[in-house]
Length: 132
View (cartoon, rainbow, N blue to C red):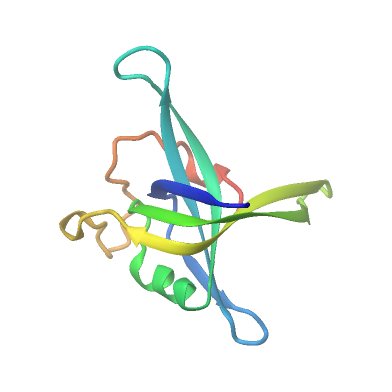
């Protein structure tokens, strides 16, 4: 069985495109922060995931999700091979989702004014440093 469930914050606005046969595909990154260590507050580490949605779910993600929002996603892992800018062969792991639920309350949604601010307290690191 290949199944993954994640709760995290969007690292950037979703980007939607269409395949040659007209199928909608939307991609975005998801930052999932976890605590570790023995202290009460715990140290934090953020893992980044490449998220891919298809068809109607792709359109929903593109229309309603924004950078910084907290979401629940469920899907499967899929490996993708590519060649980077330096000509090196690489492998990326994408999360192909089949379920998505918005968790950020409506009154706390990021504004649509194009602000790049992230409303959470988790350290997401430099967003441009993450591939996708």
